[in-house]
Amino acid sequence: MRPACHARTRPRTGVRVPSSSSAVNSAVRSAHVSTARPRNTPETSGRHHPPKTSLTPPPGAGAAVRHPDAPAPGELLGSHYGQCFGCGADQAHGLHLEIRAGEGVDVTAEFRVRPVHQGAPGLAHGGVLSTALDETMGSLCWLMHTIMVTGRLETDFVRPVPVDTVLHLSATASAVQGRKVFTRATGRIGGPDGPVAVRAEALFIKVQVEHFTDHGRDEEIKAAMADPDQVRRARAFEVNP
Ligand SMILES: CCCCC/C=C\C/C=C\C/C=C\C/C=C\CCCC(=O)SCCNC(=O)CCNC(=O)[C@H](O)C(C)(C)COP(=O)(O)OP(=O)(O)OC[C@H]1O[C@@H](n2cnc3c(N)ncnc32)[C@H](O)[C@@H]1OP(=O)(O)O
Image (cartoon, rainbow, N blue to C red):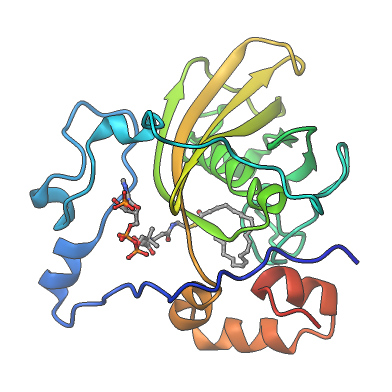
């Protein structure tokens, strides 16, 4: 069995949850999608993070490194969680992405747009397309053997994507600096070398497994931990059986 991504040993950095709803609102940081507004201002985020340029790896960033035990090129990564909207087989209206390892720190996937994914009549919803790119980039964690979550995601919508289109997705990790993993992805139509319909850049932040066990709703956490499918449990929560 291929090992799940390894939990990191450094102390967990907690996500503070303020008690009042206004404090919660001021603390919530939303992923920005191609807008001219300044990013992560104190007004919008309540926290001080680097501006938009932070999606570009800084000069001191290192290369992303393929783990020696990463899935072989061409191997299907499989779902990390059955209920995942991006890759879960148990999620009826999900994207059901089947993602394959590339030769470096890169992956490919195909996504067929279904009627449940519409925004305008006959066209894919932009948020769904962003999700497909997000999931594809997030799955790069299997190649690096690290757990990470999306911190920022920026999508360019280049061409409309009709229902029943197969979107040919590819993603790569361009750099790593500390806990930050810089990634980019494209979705092409008509074939893997077809014209780009959507592209994205994202900043993922490495976390420990407690990110999920501490913050996820109890019933889903318990169900996942009780899942007799040891492979799925290990993949979802990094608990090696
Ligand atoms: C969704 C999966 C759940 C299933 C769980 C199961 C298994 C997991 C295992 C494998 C997963 C497999 C495949 C992946 C599949 C799917 C991909 C989809 C991924 C998602 O869809 S995931 C959901 C959306 N995602 C969130 O739900 C995150 C909410 N959020 C937080 O939980 C915190 O916000 C956090 C943890 C991000 C950071 O919090 P923190 O306290 O740990 O760290 P801190 O703030 O100190 O940041 C450290 C350094 O990152 C920089 N930084 C941070 N955030 C930034 C930002 N937004 N912009 C610019 N820079 C940023 C700082 O500037 C600093 O940089 P520097 O080191 O230079 O100072």
